[in-house]
Amino acid sequence: MATPAPRRMTLAEFVEWDDGTDTLYELIDGQVVAMAPAREAHGTIVANLVLAIGPQLQPPCRVVGNAGITRPESADSFYIADLAVTCDRPADQRFLLAEPRLIVEVLSLDRGARPRPQGRGVTVPPECAGNPVRVQRRETSRALAP
Image 1 (cartoon, helix red, strand yellow):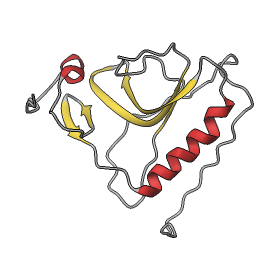
Image 2 (cartoon, helix red, strand yellow):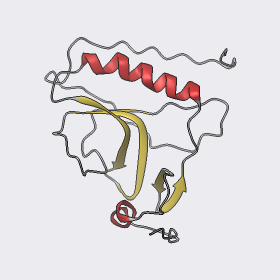
Image 3 (cartoon, helix red, strand yellow):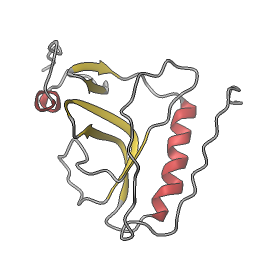
Image 4 (cartoon, one colour):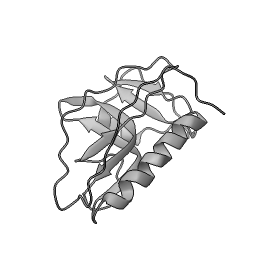
């Protein structure tokens, strides 16, 4: 049964809460925030990243889409990253990745981006990495062609 979001939630309350819809939510400083649907270009970028990163990983490492992540210093926030790499054993009922090795968030230039958690340097351990992946950052202000 759908229940309205309380004014503030803990992480434990948030992962148990269900509003009865397919809407994705994040918990930011205890506040429930609905996520806007991704645009086609966003989905294409994420899919291309999965195709580039996935084959480079050695089991048990794998790419997880719409990965639930938290920050160790923040007990009242839960973010959904576009993708993450984890080397933990898979768990069907887990809502969040305990120790993501890489977190990727694709940001749109034309949308008002809300503040995201600041990343730390990521080191992929040798047992997870196959061939190195080269990631090139490009910034552009032109619109994507159809």
